[in-house]
Each structure stands twice: as structure tokens, then as C-alpha cells.
Length: 141
Image 1 (tube, rainbow, N blue to C red):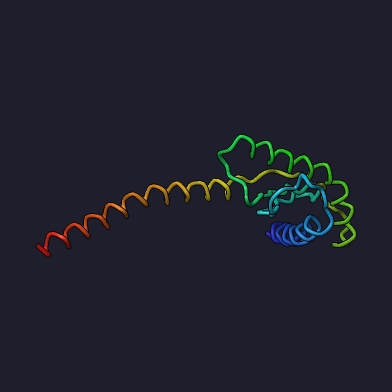
Image 2 (cartoon, rainbow, N blue to C red; image 1 turned 45 degrees about the horizontal axis):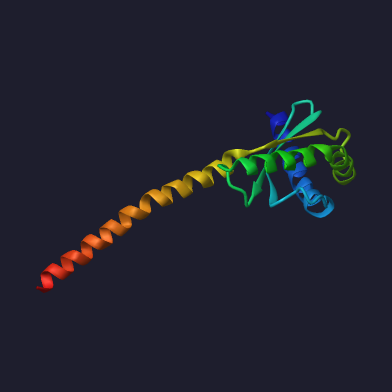
């Protein structure tokens, strides 16, 4: 149990530092949108950290955006060595985990579903309003 608590603390610290590093140090123009780290899983031996990122400002359904997400992951995985080196300087641990970036589509999928729900509810609201206004007109006669 103490090991899992240690991994959680390590993951939280890595997440904070990586967020700052990505925002301030990476200047690649292919990093479109706002790159956020939605979660980190550190392996039990602290050799690897799986970093789950979300790119805000892009939709899930567009094929061009799928390519843009791939480009973002390519940039992040290409900069993983640099990010690991800087991370090692900042967190001062004996072992600095190797970084593996993955796209986390849970947030994007949730936004997509919320948009679909909002579109589905809109016609119902307009139907209710038109029914209410027709009843008001009939009572005036």
C-alpha cells in the first residue's frame, strides 16, 4: 500500500513538472491547441511513466484532427528524452522514469457526446416553446 501511495505522489509531481515543461520549453509549431496532461501512470519499478495527454480545441470526429493528434504525439515522443532530462533536474530523484506519451481521447469523446446531447435536446425545446405559444394564441380568441 505504501508503494502505491509513493507511485501516486511521484505521478503527481511528474505531472506538475511536465505540464510546466511542455508549456514553457517546447516551442514546436506542430503542438497545436492546448496540450494538457490528463493523467500519468508510473510503473511499479519507476522505470516508465505513461503520460496521457489531451489536446484541447480539436474535435474527435474529423480525420484531419486525427492526423493532428498523431503529429502532437510524435512531437511529444520525440522530445521525451529532453523532457526526461529536464524532469530529472527538477525532481531530484534517483530514478527518472522514461516517458511514453499516449493520446487520451476520453475527454474529447466526452465533449463530443455532450455536443450530441445538446443538439438532440435543442429540437425538443423549440417544439415545447411553439406548443406553449400556440396555446396562448388559442386562449386569446
